[in-house]
Image 1 (cartoon, one colour):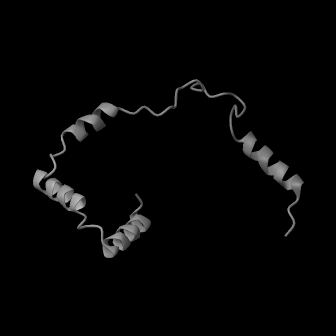
Image 2 (image 1 turned 30 degrees about the vertical axis):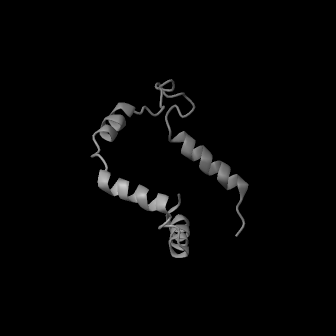
Length: 87
């Protein structure tokens, strides 16, 4: 199928003709369309999160420092999780 460029010009002219003042700048051309983010709400929500279970954290630290978690199986599972879920 071949497109005649003259037909495209005709279509564009017809579309423009149907638009009143199509070349006129909109009256709100100087409106600021930037995104405004309120970080205070995010910070407030983050400070309201419950404290970590200190026993679980202490147990994890103990297992890490003892080397009990450094097994080939744990290494494979960690690598697989990194590939699946990212860091």
